[in-house]
Image 1 (tube, rainbow, N blue to C red):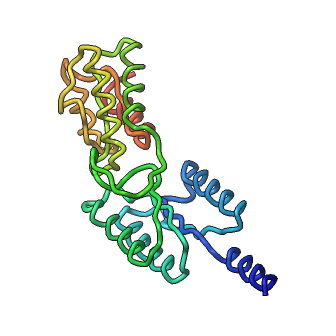
Image 2 (image 1 turned 90 degrees about the vertical axis):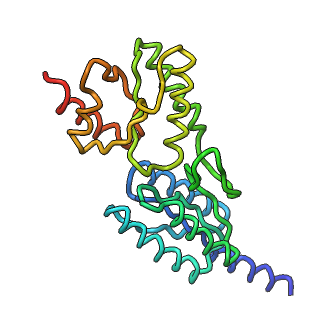
Length: 231
């Protein structure tokens, strides 16, 4: 019966899948992550089931994420790679609910890029990401070495905990350099809000350098150029 056992095992392995949930699987950054997960799974005889959360509002994506979680349960995936959703009014509660549903069905979860609780807290789940505190530190230190003396950290409201970690790292570099760093240096702002951006850059104490949340860089650069400085 060993031959039959091996055949059954190979067949079962080929049908086992991992669930993959990221905010936008077609965005170049996330597409590379999904491709890497798919290639890694295939090398070991598994497949992936990737969420199609679309490019709508974060509320719409959250609805689709909940629907995809149900699909994962029906398809009996053997594990889920999840980048916690952000920019939601109750993001931690939503992500905790998603994860709880997987745990209740014995499905392990690996978090991508960020945890869903605010630092310094951490959940018990494995997390694949970078050292965000050090990243913020290095960015700010580079600006200081280039001559910046008034640095602001820009982030959207309700961003992932990674954004707070980068802000902490930037603050550490600024403080080490003997420069001023306080709550006013951390700006929660929608880069599409020209008035809000202009308020930050008005007056004599306006920042002379910015460390932005990565996704804000193109929008923020355009907002500063169009709304603050004249050519």
